[in-house]
Length: 187
Image 1: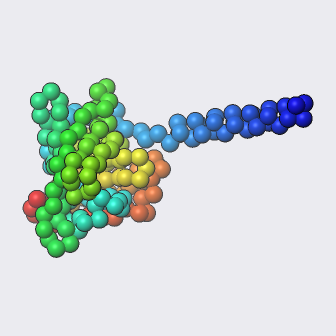
Image 2: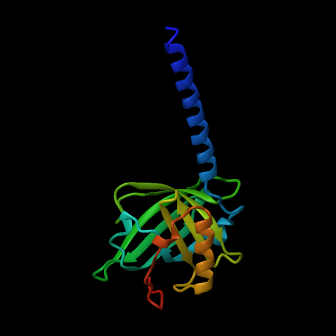
Image 3: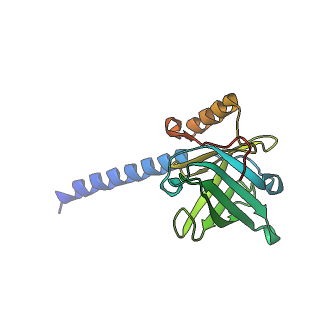
């Protein structure tokens, strides 16, 4: 037993150090959201300018939009639309609730029977937002990122600035895919 005691102590110390390192990494990895979101101003149509590739948007060839509507008792409805590779319009309806009422910058969004897959839910965090709500950057973890605009096109300098700020939060922006939007924004 005496020979096993030092080994157990060493293993215990290694486990404690590993747990602390994991906790520190987790704290550093947390996404910084914007300080506040006026939900009424956030509502309306957003055009996807770019996204990190994901499996649930594989069918989307272009004209990707997200339209948010504020309902009774603060409930939010979400309508995501895109054109598939054949030009057909595809839609997904979802519901969102504010997950952080102090800032309104975190939403719990659930899609049921969507073009993504069924069911799909995620925690969305608004990590960047224009002063006039002209653009937004939304993330779910570090695997999902969307750069959104109120118009179908975005100034390249604004896009680069948003991509750089996303990179500063740990996103691999070299993987961003720009979204084809028809000039009229017909969705």
